[in-house]
Every structure is written in structure tokens, then in C-alpha cells.
Image (cartoon, rainbow, N blue to C red; front, side, top):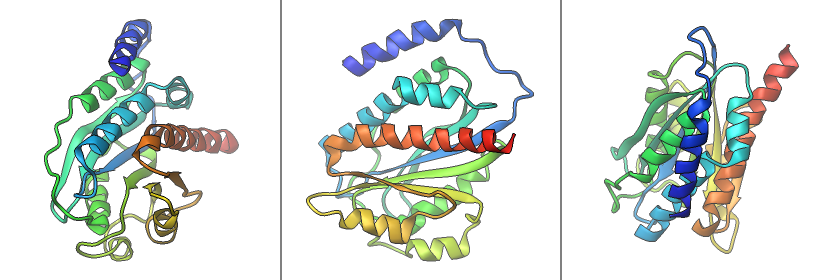
Amino acid sequence: MVIRRALLALAVAAGLAAPGTAQEQCRLALLLGLDVSASVDAGEYAQQIEGLAAALIDPNVVEAALSGNGPVALSIYEWSGRFQQDILVDWTLIRSEEDLTTVAERVLRATRRTEDFPTALGYALGFAASHFADAPPCLFQTLDLSGDGQNNDGFPPEAAYAHFPLAGVTVNGLAIGGASREIELYYRDQVIQGPGAFVEFARNHDEFAEAMRRKLERELRVVILGQLDAD
């Protein structure tokens, strides 16, 4: 309820925001991939959905998303087994707080489609490559892939990078672990790629919302700083 009230308040406040012009160059295509494999139970799935929605309307994330030169294109999908990838939000240009509020509301309305498939990280990367092909033309492309387990189905991330057009995509990770940081090390060694790629770590799903907030703000601000350096 707290998240939904915040969304409503943002929707009202954003009503006065001016839309961007059609000539603006999209600065970043940001694709978020959420793990919905069998290791994620119903409660943890709810934490991911609510945590992502909360992160999208966090004031620091909103400011980072809207501070660059040109809009951000955002899309969100769920992944688990080899052929279980479902788009929650297709490519959407973010030009205002209202746009982020709308995306967050769509995330909150999501219905989980699969829950008993393994963890096919290679296929999740391959799906991302094909989905980026449908993105608006943007200066940069970033995949934000979260998960709580290592690949245990199909080809590994290394094979995905060898066979799919991901060379120009920065891939960051949000590793959800337990007592150890083994999953963080796995994401660091096997999953992320590209200049400045990084891994955010959440000890459990209780910390997912805060880790996602940090991750989104960092991803959005990296592009802003890169543009400033180039000017």
C-alpha cells in the first residue's frame, strides 16, 4: 500500500512535466532481467516486483533518469529456463516522472507466468540480445541482470557472449546471495561484461529493493558522466 500511495502521488506531481521533443537522441537503452526460476518462491517474487517498483520511483533514480541529454528507453523481462522469458514492460521512452510511475504501476500488476524452471543464464543473455534488436536507437545499451543462482540449464554465459551480438552491450549484475558471497563472485567472473561493468550484491531478497535502487542510480549516472566527459 505504501508503494501504491507513492505511485499515486508521483502521478499527480508529474502531471505538469513537459514531454521531451521528438528530436531528442535516446541516450541509453536499459533492459532489466528478473530471475523467476524455481529457487525464487512466491514471497521472494513479490519482494522483487515491489522492490523494483519502489526503486523506479525513488527520487534519486528519478533524478538520474531525467538528468541526462535525451531520454532513456526502458524494458523489463522475467527469465528462468531455456525458453521461459516473458516481457513485463516493452521498450518505453522515459521522459518524465509520469513515465516512470506508469512503468512501476505495470510492474506491480505483473502476474508470474512460470515458477518451476531452472536457471538458464545463457538463454537469458541470448534473449536480451534479440530484444535489444527491437530497442529504439540509443547511444548506449545496458543489461541489468539479477539472479540468485548459477547457470544450471543449457549453455553458459560464456557461450552466449560467443554466439550472440552482445559485444556492444554493457552487462551488470545484481547477485542475490545467502550467507556467502559465492553468487556475487560467480556473476563477477561469468556474467558481467563491458567497460565499467559491476555487480551489486544483496544478501537476500529482503535487500533486493535497496540493491536495485543503488544499481539503477549508478547505471543511469555512469551514462550522464560519460556524456559530460565527452562534451
